[in-house]
Image (cartoon, rainbow, N blue to C red):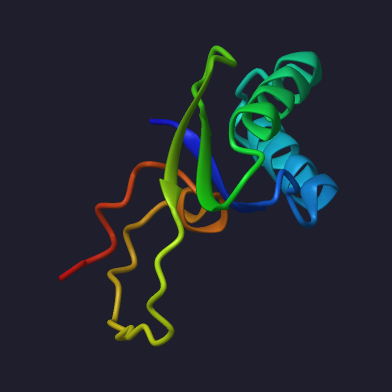
Length: 110
């Protein structure tokens, strides 16, 4: 299982970067994952330098050992999205719901 944070990167700027960093750091603490701020900052710098032109969806992932990975995709021009609420079972760990993890078995996507 990994934690992840999804952010917008546009024109070499991550809006609300400190919010995203604090959210990831807090989730790491709650789940007992290592979080190295220097590694986070270095990855963010690399992404800003590499994707300085255009608009992107960036997903930064971290595993329990504190190893970061990322996925970058161009932002879609789609303006309308649909979602459907579904009832979940009660046997889902709250930490999986509260923290953004790659354990998404409780979600159903079309």
